[in-house]
Length: 291
Ligand code: NDP
Image 1 (cartoon, rainbow, N blue to C red):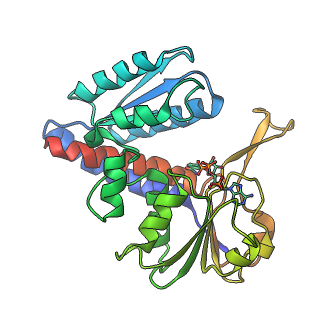
Image 2 (image 1 turned 135 degrees about the vertical axis):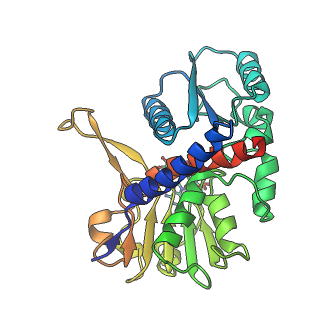
Image 3 (image 1 turned 180 degrees about the horizontal axis):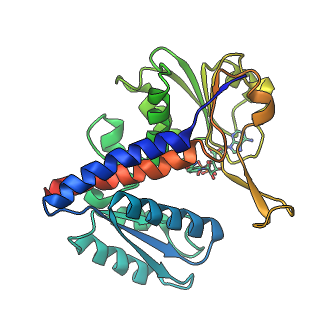
């Protein structure tokens, strides 16, 4: 039976440490500030943004949630981001994705000042991170590296298969893990929907990372016995027995895979809480330039 990687408690530990750092910074007159822009009323986005704001408050980070309805124009949204770029009390700006159709998400990413790009999505920071330069790393990949490190899982020389090549999870993660760095040095395969014989490719992995958004697609057949399995997927499955009407499921068949893996992340309680911890960490990192 696999060891369960407890992202919730690791995240809590990181947030406690950050709270001390923030308190020291506030004592020197700099309180880190995060602005979260929420457009429309996507229920998952509402949940994420309120969790982020709550975590900020607990760590002593100033946060402001700025809401606009789904009908906001591209120009209005760009003006809003422009005004946040100019605010001296805001160190990090995040625009919660997905944006309603009609809004150009890529253009918004480009408008955020790279020095306030708390998600690490701006091409300037993507470039800097891929060159191993200090810059805010995208939160989910950074959280996964933290989890592996915390549990003493060696990446150097490991065969890693990342399934999913999105710009926010799979691709930056593959990049970081393959870098010549303390938490990298892995031999990485980046798989996607056109990968042939996906289960065979995945079975090569010492560390298998599923970030595809397909509930339960990664079955025991994809996993080499003893492999480490990181499940990034967050999928809402209708469930009439729950008050909310849904339950969360990962991309991995947890019941079966936990029987053969050495370590596994649960959903919820694995990667998700780490993403939030890294968001706070990036906010603090960006605020340090004001000290
Ligand atoms: P995207 O939809 O942007 O990307 C999905 C990737 O998976 C694509 O590269 C796609 O391939 C690939 N893929 C889809 N279906 C298959 C398949 N059947 N076989 C192989 N590859 C496939 O998703 P994201 O990266 O944004 O998110 C992935 C999952 O992670 C989602 O469930 C999301 O909710 C979750 N997530 C969780 C976070 C957390 O904090 N825990 C944070 C961010 C995301 P192709 O490129 O060929 O289309």
